[in-house]
Length: 254
Image (tube, rainbow, N blue to C red):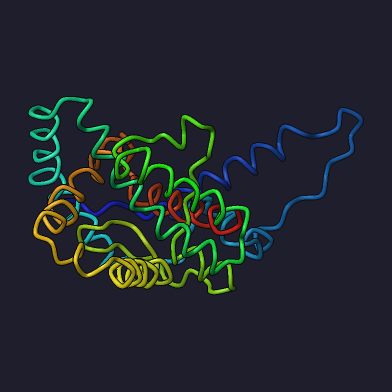
């Protein structure tokens, strides 16, 4: 399979052509010519100017291999399982399943909102969890949203970012997808804190284990609309890397 040229290698000549064309087309009719742009100036600019999708990726070779692995895993395992799940499960039941797992996610959102000292998120999240766990029959029904209580979303990666921890190197995690060093650590802390909080009599129950580790991943993939190689762009890896990085930066600042 031929190796694709890096985006920056394609973008630089295009940028030069656009700049040179722009200079030729902006001459003053009265004879005044704008100062010529020197080529060294281009290379003094920030890297993002020369490559708008630039994201530091020191492990790019490994990340690209894992991206291809995840695409194959998605194509041959996860998506067929999701398709079978959709085929045999009525929409009403799928909605109840998603609501149940989203309600469990309120636990980590509440914990991280407290760690970020954000009472404006912690309070409503606690109320949401209480309402949906009782009136909503263990979260099967999202009664809180019907009452106008908005769902927040916080995780340990955002908490680390809130307290000044940078994202670190871009990572592609096997099966889990795009991330970075900070968020990968955050995922481990989210999992550990959730397991610590969950009572042993529930965490050790076989039905709960089947639901969390069997149905949970299927529901998570079902709720994510992204499909590998569906963008139609030869630069999908760069687009996903840039999009994920920018989205997480916004979520940390939010």
